[in-house]
Image (cartoon, rainbow over all chains, first blue to last red; front, top):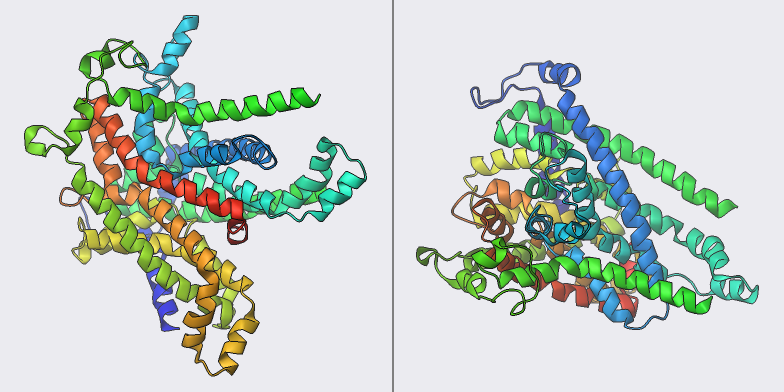
Length: 280
Length: 282
């Protein structure tokens, strides 16, 4: 099919272009595709602590939020899987945050966490506290995590619930005949059966979480200082704020390579954990 | 034991529901405030704690010349861009997915599964990596700040989703169906749109839904690739955020823009309960 080839062309072009750009010194003083060799890469590996810090922060942020999302999402899916009153109401409600535009909700969250006029601190003021949610280094990170968990747990919930609903009935019948308690049923039947779906869901969410950028842009703009800056936000600043396009292409390409390698490792690691539970 | 479990179950569900609802309630309450009720301290309930005002809602439909926020135009822009690009990426994505699922491609060591993976790997790429080539590319085609340019970019973003869901779906439609159609004298194209396609409607709906969600909620590309001529909804609302922050109209605008996709949540739930979705998402 020729259509397929055209599509491949459209999709592969940006990568090749990025690689080419990463060897050029394109910035606002000197626009154009010249060739400066490895200069950008040398700068990245010797003289850019901020990038690596933002990368570590991104790793921390995405792994913790995805872990929380998995636990909460799986838990909620289990809760509304079987008989519960208002089942459909809860299911719809739990899906809603995923359908809302992250930036727009983040604008609302910003007012929600406002230090003197927001309801969160209204609550905390009952205990005589006023945590500076958005202007304290650690708390700002916590706020970003809360917003992320709110926004994307529904995605995990959806995948896990769809998985639970498609499970075969026989193993559960067998377990019921053996008189297994519900906790044992979960450990020996539900969880192993859900393992492949869990791995898939976690990987998808890690991919999406690593791209986190607009939430941070609106909520904290990477601040205070650089305390909530993630890798993609840093690339954004370098590329489209300071117009060091060549250098930011270098960052992007390095970022892409690291992401692919680390995701492969994480996938292997997850398979090991989940499948080990299967063998026992 | 049983009652304890039930109590725990319901309290967990209720607790999470409250967390989900909280920002919406806050936004609804804020949207009826005016300057005084926002700045005079935290309040929640209209009439009791503050005098409701409809300024936040009125300002949305006023033209900019009368001090309003023009949200109607970005709204239609957003709808147009989302629907057009979803439609095109579903069509292209479905065709590509069908090809990947039914025919064998070989180019050296590259096989079908590699091509499929290549499509999915597009989602791994952070938007920022794509944004710079896109920015320069659209600039070169003088499509920056136009609806056309945005539609093009969104097709590239959404098509992997469509391909990914549809490949999975076509793989589940038994091959015998096509073969029977071919024996009955259909050519491959007829076999596709008369026989295979009608069998994949649930997959198409799921893929369409995901395309619409991810198209509608994108902010980053709209933010980078447009300036003044064309504005999409998320960009328009975030722009409000940077000014002196009229919280009331901000909340009203946010609610209006979030509303249409909540309908999608109902559709997803219906498919979920019928069990059609489970096959499509893996």
